[in-house]
Length: 474
Image (cartoon, helix red, strand yellow):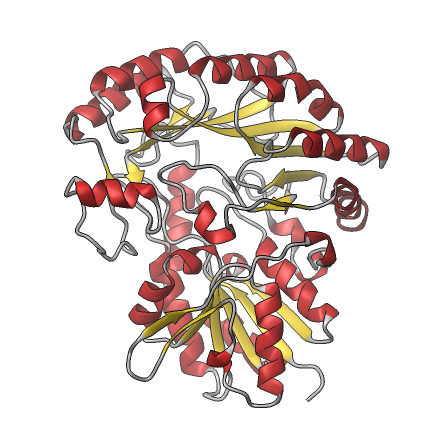
């Protein structure tokens, strides 16, 4: 066996919030193809008949290996929560049921990496990939060729042995990201990913990654666990070249940069924008940012290179709450950054979290009062019906400081299984009072979306939710 056939399923089927092109799967496919293998990607978000499409793909492609990606486990919203893992679980069970027993099924993806042991045990499955998958999947295929034991791989895998013991090898962190080939977008239905999934037609979007890893210490975030705390940057030239290909080869005019934070290194950010301008890439792009003065100074350059939309986890306008979340910035920086975006006609989506450690009704009101002073440019491309998303409580993820805080305060038990969503809300607040305050401000600010309460939902949201739940039936 020289080349092997690898069938990759993107198992997440989320359309309510955003339809996400399977970028991680496209990266994995590109690297395996560069190693001489044949790869097919099937994004089940786009499927209207999951069993039929899975069966056809397996029968026609006849894979030597099946990979299944789990991106998101749940919607991180409270008290109303979408538990994305359940439909993915049914999909995995069906694949294992119909695939030939000799075909290895390997699980992976960001959501799987966070809950690898819990998911393996729940599915009674034996093997998965934790962290970045390109190199470890290539190693898996090498061993498949010679019928070697996959559990002897020393990096990137996790497994449960015959005695029921869980083992996890250190994840692979690819140092030079420029050595990876560009994602294989020819294996993706690029025209299917609508910016506004509430509509049946309209502008579409693609995604790109400019770095991996995050050095920040936000108490609730699992990003460091997934990609590590050491940041590895792609070269600005490579980023511009990939954007040029996206526009000219795939007609992707709107791009979102999926890094956890785009503005970690300002030299890298500046050079990236300069390369986009140099390559004359005609594109609208957006990114996640942390507000501060250096970012403000570079917004005009970003605008010139095509920036039209920014998303930011402002989280709170209370200095006390920002400190409690381990955010190293002030509320004023967020206000000034938002003002600059408004001046330059750049759309913003602001994330706010209420109910974290130390929160009181006074800090919630003070934060909302500040938020009401922010003006948002309302373009017609990215944002649609809302400028702000208010999250109530913090989703407790394993491997985070919030898990330890929640254990110490008795919100959860020590080493509790967190696969089924658990949320932290400050003991200083009664939930019913918090819900009331959030609704109170929501009435006065109809563009503040509050998905956990089902409040200020965009037009057509209820209809789309019915389509979402229908997709979960398998």
